[in-house]
Length: 312
Image 1 (tube, rainbow, N blue to C red):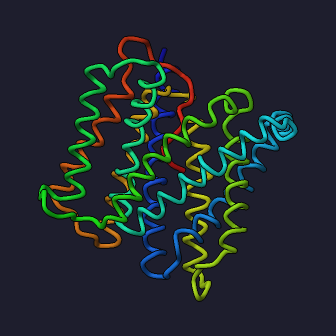
Image 2: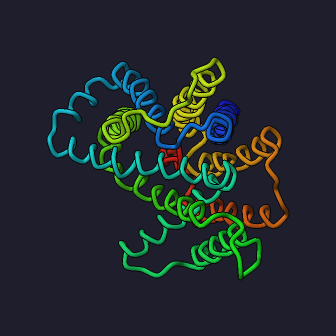
């Protein structure tokens, strides 16, 4: 029993670290946008290709047979391409666009509307009405989004229309990112699927963008922050998240990983000096609470499956 408790605590600490790193990487992205003029499309391109190559290398070492089998089946390869373009690419690009038009804290919390949208889609698929807990989550998301967007003033928008639109699109992207690869992940594992999807999406974006929108000068700071976003904002937290959840369970893991918007907001305020108001906190709390409402099962014991995180 003691060893089990120690494993759970270890897993919770690992997941906490992963969520904190995700939030910090969002603020690093905001810094590059504001101080170096890097575009979200360029950063998405570099991040996806670099992270894809690293995750694929890990997948090749640990899941070589599954990876080869997945890439040689036409049906699964087509499924993988769809996931890479409409799941990961859509998810990554919309999130970074939302950061560029708002800030890392607001963009991250808006992305956390995604689980509520997934719940609503599940209700449609299962042909049922939301239960009381789910209805409360929907109401909280609407109130939280309204507070963030208007600061309580019906006649104005506090964040730009583009920022709000990209934030809501990033939440929608979470639905595609989470639901599209379910069958692939069950058969081949998370790292081969996500690594391949990232590389596919990154290559597709390269053809469209050709790596335009980068910094005028690649000094040591730019390279350092790019490395942080790729290594400490994607590869390490993603693999750490999977390891942590395997120890502490999906329910605890998904709750603890929601430290991400808190981390992004604290880094944004302390490091970049962005203003943060009480009304923003109220909006954050409304959306934040939905994570706990939807992650908590009604009666079943703690599960040990691996949920998909909102963002990489």
